[in-house]
Length: 133
Image (cartoon, rainbow, N blue to C red; front, side, top):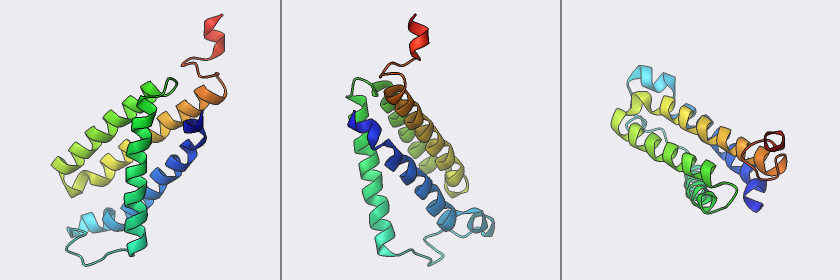
């Protein structure tokens, strides 16, 4: 299943996203009470393009997982966690944005690892083969 083979790319993207978020809206900026848009500190254009392309690809990947036979449950939970995380980040503001993003990325990465394990080691079953004997 091709979705399982490209899952490590999305795990790497989530790690990249957390590192970039820490750099631009990290603890130092939150303690200083400076909003990233007001600080005048912006990254390079290629970084913004990479992040946007990665975010769109991540949403498309999660949607594709929902419609796959082996990854429907993981894809659905990832979509729900991402939508909930987005709503919480928008409503709770900058102070909690990094914390919420960290939990959201951890859920997505954990589900991607679970998906890869179920495809590669458990032959696409949601539980190990020993549960079926």
